[in-house]
Image (cartoon, rainbow, N blue to C red; front, side):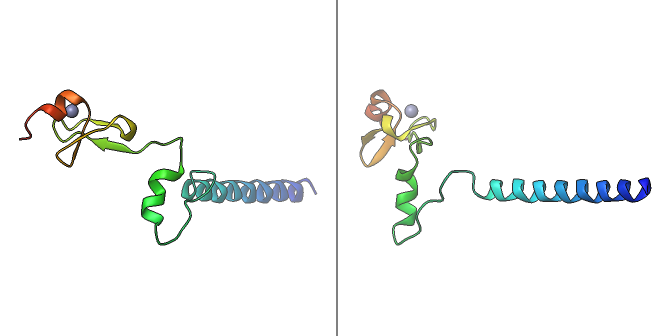
Length: 90
Ligand SMILES: [Zn+2]
């Protein structure tokens, strides 16, 4: 009888482990609360929807990545600072 209980417990534990693994994998597929709304402008909307993750841009002069809110635009390119925007591009 105790053997049967042992096997039942083992099966329950294995089932629980598999279920938690599946849940973990599903969480990895949807890292945020809501997936970005799909539509004709899905690509553009993806950059604006989440306030937690800000879009990062690369400076055309030094190549450093910085938040899009701090961008300095000059000659149609993005720069990390006014100093780099003033410099002649290579
Ligand atoms: Zn720069």
